[in-house]
Image (cartoon, rainbow, N blue to C red; front, side, top):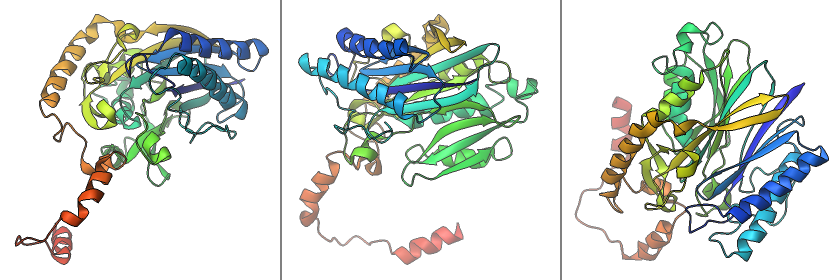
Length: 381
């Protein structure tokens, strides 16, 4: 029997501001999804929270992109939104970009990560859930988990991993994807996913047998809505052990914080801080960006867990380093590189400011670069 693991998340109201979720909203979502389990539409469900976002974790046999499953998540978020509005929570229902469900939740605001597989004799998985950042936050750790032997020893030692993994990379602006084989094409992979504003890793497959190893949500709210309506706050599922990276190899990339885009108003760069469930309440400058790691064992489709994997004090140094990085970036204030570059500010108020000032720009005596000369220089390079 093929099992489907679906994780669908949304921000349907912050308490207080963008820092946390309200227990009544979470309970409403949990109760609604629980009734769908009782009806037999789902095998099992669980609820995770990170910052002001709620993720519904579901197991079932309907496959990915299933209308019934997506409708369950949509209606659960609608119910939660009603409670959020009653409590006058901030941004109530902000990730629900339409009033009507159209058969698939993708493109409607919520983030979606799903995979289908045959349950192994032991099936450990890790669900990562981040707040105040974008889907490209997963690019670096996925590379280290599945393509860097200095981080994942199993790429050298485990016969099922030795042939490497294939990365499916999505171009966020065209919707086109490309599959890149590693280790043979690892430099091609890095050339793309290093451009975090344009390319994101969508899926990872094991070369040994084509089995799916990881999947991530890739929805960008600003690209869907045409304006800034909130941060994307992605989720990711990673399978572990027995031909996949061990739990420790999956978590290792997060021991060294790196810079991601998002943070305050989705317009700043900041360190991704690994935290326990309890500490996933970003408040300093609406951050810094946070990530939790929920570990589950799957048994006959049921979710055993979650285990709070970042609660380990071994990640204390990562948290300390992330705070130091946050201090350095905050010193920049509204200036780049703390604030995102102009091309990433397209959906904020910046274009309106430029529009207002466009007639006030005037020519100066400064020499302007000639396009042909620039092109000629690029060709020579």
